Image (cartoon, rainbow, N blue to C red):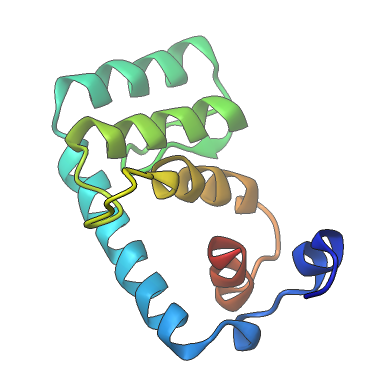
Length: 125
């Protein structure tokens, strides 16, 4: 295995094994579906309002239409996903990394020239 820094900088989508690519597509679909469903819950609305009103900015808040500062938009997206708490599928270790990872990657990608394959490689990483 290469050193961690090289792995971070050099990983490309074609380097991800096909079974992991398939699993990642399902996780992404799961996260987006849970985010859409969680948006209707009170906790999501409270956090999205907080992000938009108290930390204004131009980064889109997931499924909201308003913007916020980068960290606030990331937090609001994560809390919308976590409000429904059905993300990341069945995971016996109770890890829910996708909850925070997806909104952060979306926020960090905003306004940058990030391809879909580069985005997926970052999500896989």
